[in-house]
Length: 347
Image 1 (tube, one colour):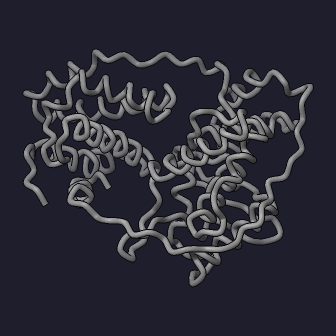
Image 2 (image 1 turned 90 degrees about the vertical axis):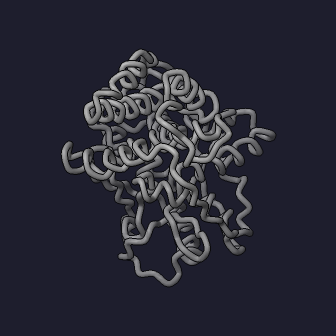
Image 3 (image 1 turned 60 degrees about the vertical axis):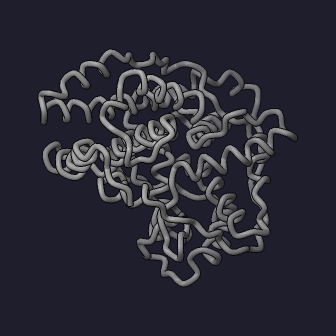
């Protein structure tokens, strides 16, 4: 592993994530994870832009100009919303406030980043969502004769059926899916709030096939991650980037035959799509709010404001698909940068 060029930077990241947030501020695991994601993405972006390794990133590189470019990249390349962009900005600012408090010589860094404005958002602006035809077109794309194709298709089906946030999906454990007369998924949402979402029979058919391929030797009460990647024989929870990558791939292929498929397929689009389809089929907004885990009904009103066809259009389609086959999961490599991130609390 290469020598760290700016030890102070990485030590402060470690102390911020491992000591300050959990012990002094009492932040929840989900909050800490969100801050960690923002810092990690900013560091990775900086290293790539500079053409260097993570070990060579320094405080001086994390300047106002670079952060502005990073925020622009989140919108244009990652397809993040203005709200996500603003949250990343707030998370990075919070870290630099901690840096300034710990060493007054770093106050100028905090002041520099404070000049970057938040991006205005209209909570009642048109909500982007997929038509039901578009959802079906994307779900058809994975090659279900392969192991990864089965995984990717089931992930998308469960993402849509539950209307879950991406982190709620990635946090799912085997034991969080309850099989019975009324199958449910238990989701851990914002503010560590837990909710149960009923699962459709078609979803459970895909679930059984997925479990036979990926968790055949595990009991239903296992705390192993439901979705994972395998590297050198070791299982690791699937990452946000991994999901975004295969969503973009399937979206691009589906768009060739279905013009309804948006150019940017991202995880939250499935949540919006599920909510809009439930609303269009007549589900009460209060029930949709509970389904999505909104703390405020006003948040759910965006779907009522966005939908202009609810009274004249109702589409009745099922999403059942036969799933068979399987192949081995490909190998992955562990890099020095993975090790560095774990050492300094970024993993």
